[in-house]
Image (cartoon, one colour):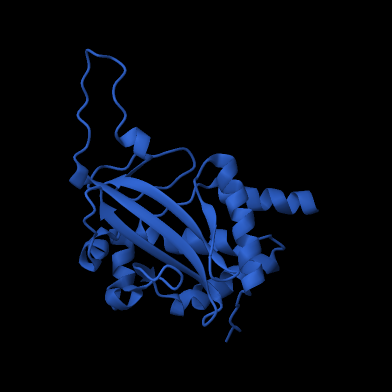
Amino acid sequence: MEEDEFIGEKTFQRCCAEFIKHSQEIGDSWEWRPSKDCSDGYMCKIHFQIKNEPAVSHPGTSTHGQTCLPMEEAFELPSDDCEVIEAPEASQVIKYEYHVLYSCSYQVPVLYFRASFLDGRPLTLKDIWEGVHECYKTRLLQGPWDTITQQEHPILGQPFFVLHPCKTNEFMTPVLKNSRKINKNVNYITSWLSIVGPVVGLNLPLSYAKATSQDQRNVD
């Protein structure tokens, strides 16, 4: 049996800093938010999706059934006065807020998120589960309510959905061990988020993986 791979809080923060650095370079809008009451903090990203629309593929990004659009694109007015494009109704646009925190109990990162329509109505746990792509539902059917639950945000004290971290070591351990076997540099946050993110509609541009490889070449 393979020994589980854990990540310390300092390593977590370093990986987040490297991740955010590349995010800023490509305009992916991830940022670090420090906690007011303690020395820790969390990564955060806000983006908007149009519900039940075919996905629009952006360069280097995989999409799963929903159109990911920045807010300004979703409501951009046409420059040609002769052409009128109807803006999406408020009920069709969903605001997603993703937070990545460190769990001292499990010694792994945890993905918290919440979603609401533009009129402020929050999505229910049932809505979130229905939004999970079919390719992930089969894997989660044995316990969807245990995999995606609603809990209080440990820093903000507000209700958030969370992907439970109990299985994180199980799927990350072989990833890290295999990367060491082939002497490949891996950013834990990049690898982990590329696995868990798509389950809830969060897809990473491929350039994150390329940036990690580039950092390795620079060190070599």
